[in-house]
Length: 165
Image 1 (cartoon, rainbow, N blue to C red):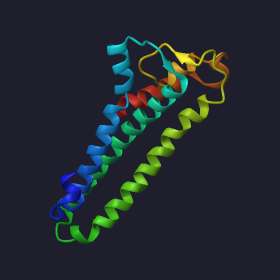
Image 2 (image 1 turned 180 degrees about the vertical axis):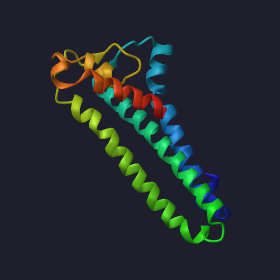
Image 3 (image 1 turned 120 degrees about the horizontal axis):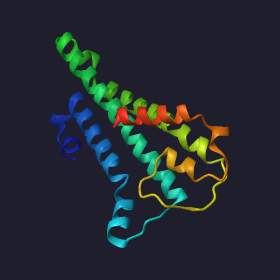
Image 4 (image 1 turned 90 degrees about the vertical axis):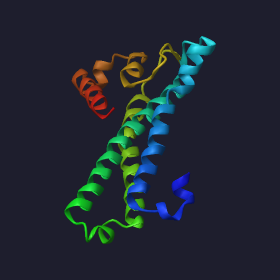
């Protein structure tokens, strides 16, 4: 909020820090409603739609955090290598445009998971998991997942998500 209200902080690095703060708030609060329900109300199930939303928000936060940290590293790289041209290379407009592009690309990366799970038939509308991830949703389907998914691909997906978090 301070970065938005103070004009002196309208610089590329501060915009990236603001974006990282938004990503971290989204990333950490993606599981909070479910954890609150489990810890305070004793609800040990989650609906299918809530599970999909939680999974997408969590993975979007994971991917965006990696993108933002890489963009911040690029910002520092340009500031060190080209100190006199830094302000002409990275303007506020370019940082905002690149940030929106990163949000779009991260959303596209995250969209493939629900697109592969939603068409499959599910045995129940409630899941017995407090944290939703891709293998948990695959295990709730009424069909043999071997036909639709390769176990190696699911494992590699988990490794990829583990590296990003």
